[in-house]
Every structure is written in structure tokens, then in C-alpha cells.
Length: 195
Image (cartoon, rainbow, N blue to C red; front, side):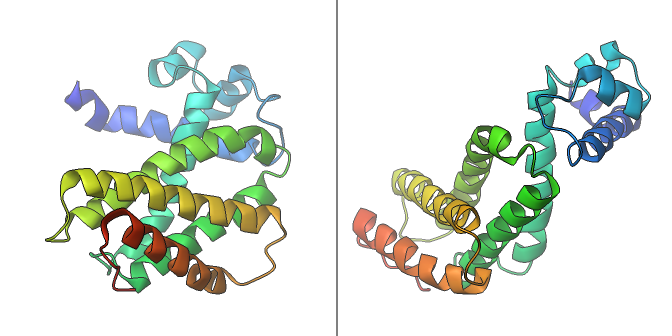
């Protein structure tokens, strides 16, 4: 099964499907996009689409998570530990994601929000758990709990920032979020973040 995931033909086909979806989503609401629209644009047949994705919502989750992961990795590439710079990078990336996605896909943004929230919250939790697990005085259970709290704070504050009209710069929002994130960490384990 692992060989299938790295087969260049499979990767190329998945990329064709993702590119087709990304080209359609700015012009159509997610509810209006059909599998036929995607397969026609990707120049594949329906069976090929279903060999890669269960439905358009699974494709959407994949497209969104890929876009977010790429942006986040660019911001965090030089920050391997939990720090002020790392947290700022995460908050700014989330702000950019919400802003770009809501502008490019204005027709689908609200309809897609439940999918976005679920997927990005899981991704953020994994990122925070990885960063927290590197702290020497952090046990796995505490890292899991803290990563869940931190992911919801980071996601929620940036979602509200976008919904309320993006009135402050993402960097300023990150500063405000630091206080909430640091307080949450202290409350959970009595451990302060060095932020």
C-alpha cells in the first residue's frame, strides 16, 4: 500500500485532481461543484477520482490541509521548539489562511467552515503536541491536553479575527494570543511558556 502512495502516477493524478478542485472553488460554491466538474477539468474519469477520494468533501479537506501545511512549514522551518517566534508563525499563518481562503472562495467559505475547523484543529493539535513533546519536563498526557487547548485557542482567535473584519494586523493578534496561550499552559500544568 505504501508503494501506491509514492507511485509517481498516483501522485501526478492526485495533483491533477487537487489542481482541478483549486481552479473550480473560487468560482463555485462547494455545493455546486460536481464530481463531473472535477473529473472534466482534471481530464480523468470518475472511477479514477473515486480511487483517490471518497467524495468532494474528502478532496476539499485534503486540498485545505495541504495548503495550510505548506504555509505553516514555510513559517516554522527555522523554529524547531515552542517559542514566541513559533507561536507568532502559527497565528500569522492561520490569519493568512483564513483571509486568503475567505477572499478566494467567498461563496464557499461559510459552507466549508465546519470541514476547515475540524481538519485544521487536528493539524494544529499535532503541531503543538510535537512542539510540546520536545520540552524535557513535559509528559505525554500533559502535552496532549495542552496541545488540544492551544489548538482551539489559536484556531478560534484567528477565525474570529477573520469573521470580525481583520481589524488588527496578524502580528498584533499573535501578541494578544500569546497571553491567552501562555495562561492556558500555566493553568494546565503550572509550566510557563518562554514566550
